[in-house]
Length: 139
Image (tube, rainbow, N blue to C red; front, side, top):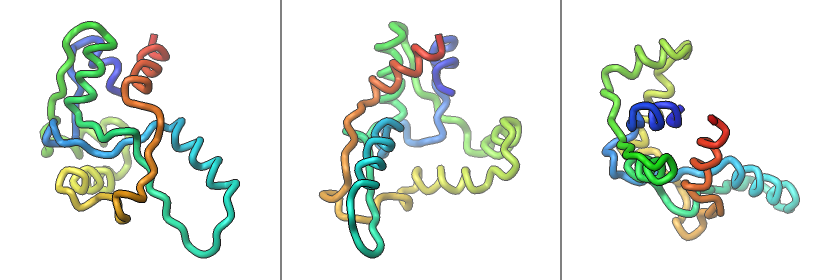
């Protein structure tokens, strides 16, 4: 959803804030690769695997990557919190509250990995690789 506004207006709307706060994100290719590896392993009981990308990224990092890829300035812009519910309903969401609560959790810091940071698996696919593929697919 960020490719079109980045390309056309030089802006990516962000629900994450502050715009320089880094958060864990992961490429779907890494999720698939790690899931396939885990399916081949044997373990007993409950197992929690936490996975993030090679580095945490902020909305400003995403905008900077788009700037490089699209070869024109792109900036992140915070979407006002009071508009989220209406916006999500307009996008076809039946109940926007769970998404709003999730975003609040990331922004306020109460959604985070539970385990020791040393045990978090790191993906291989970086932000620029993901965004280049999205830009290419969007034409």
